[in-house]
Amino acid sequence: MKNKIAVKLTLYFSAALLIFSIVIGGIFMNLFRKNAIEIHKKELERRALTIASTISELLGGYRLNLGRGMGGMGMNMHGGMGPYIRNLNTIAMADAWIVDEDLNILTTGTMAHRHYKYADLPSDAELVVKDVFKGETTFSEGFSQLLEVPTLTIGTPIKIGGEIVGALLIHSPVKNMDDAIDSGFKILIFSIAIALILSLILSWILALTFTEPLKKMKKTAIVLAGGDYDAKTGVKQNDEIGDLAATMDLLSQRLKEASKEREKLNKQRQDFITNISHELRTPVTVIRGSLEALSDEIITEPEEVKEYHKQVLNESKNLERLINDLLELSRLENVDFKIEKEVLNLVDVLNDALRSASNMARMKNIILNYRGNKELFTYEGDYGRLRQMFLIVLDNAIKYSPENSSVYIILKDNKIIIEDEGEGISKEDLPYVFDRYYRVKSPENKTGTGLGLTIAKQIALRHGIDLYVESQENKGSKFIFDFKTS
Image 1 (tube, rainbow, N blue to C red):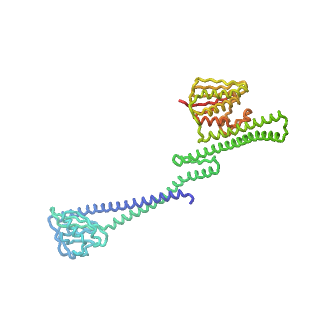
Image 2 (image 1 turned 45 degrees about the vertical axis):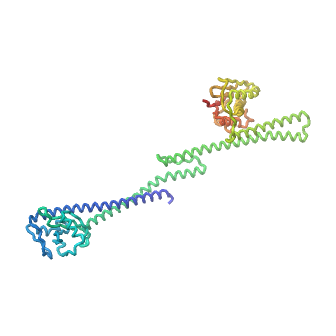
Image 3 (image 1 turned 180 degrees about the horizontal axis):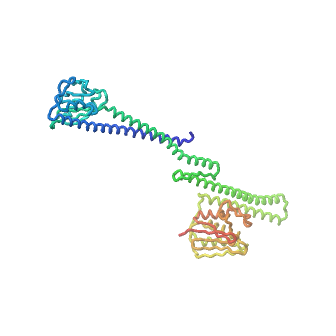
């Protein structure tokens, strides 16, 4: 059978029920037997006391006189005593004996034809009679062998005027009681069998109810492993299995999102590699072509040679810039790379960055408009790295600002805001401006590698600065540095 858990659960449940039934059945049968014997004893005791009281009344003041006769034993009787004694077995609904202290027996009914000698009596008969003549009502099972059937015997005294004159022994076969116990045991076994059959059916249904959601989750897991992240378990239960199914559905959703993100990152990586390859190939091609022209002496005019040398130098600088950006980003993303920090004034760092950016701004006739509400803003960090961070964002703001516009640098409380008047960033591009492989497609960014803002973000993270951007299309962009100081 394929449903192994259901089989195991059914077997475990049935085995537990069987063991429980055997234990409970054993305890029940033991208690039932004891209770049945106790009830039988009480009934025998009631009958024995009633019969002994009746015999005492019939005797009146006469004493029992047991003698030879009646098949070896006799008894002098008067009034209604004779008929009562002759019908004693019927009245007692069992074999009834009347004995004296010397174990002389008067018996009637089924035992009338039997002659018992003292030696025939069981070993505890004398003890029973002695206890009776002490005034006790006692029970014994020692007569069973003599009577040739399992028997419960009760002995009770016969009294006249407070004096014990004889012992009444009533022998009740326990066969009927054993038959009742056996019948009860058979009913118990039958009930246990029915209960086991029902438990097998119910436990199988319960096990299937338990395992069906697991089978659905298994199928979902196999589908997820195959790369189909749209798969869902479809299990809705308010229990631990339902929680597990909900977790798997959440995992499916997260895997789908991760798959989309991975595809997007792969595309960005490919675009980045394409861009970097282009950025590397272009200067290398120019440098190689210029050097070949110089080496083959195709260019011999001094002015042209000088121009070619200048071109090789510029292209080598571009290569150096690109390689330095890549190395810089690699170092910043390495957690083992330590940044030397010291307490410094962020206003000085910002002013230094503004001075460096002013030359680029002047080329586009852009005004750098600085407004600050304090001259001292202490912070612990690396001066060069923080200056680089500000300069990257300023360079980005100037690059995307139109000519004859302004860039605003605002120092307020614990935030530094760099705002431009450019075209802004689209909603589609906004979440990815700090990604390593992302580059906004625009005329101003033809020569960009998409590493500048990524480097700025990494410097901010290493200094505990929250750097984020707010932008709307045709309304410019705001890059906000939150220093989170108390």
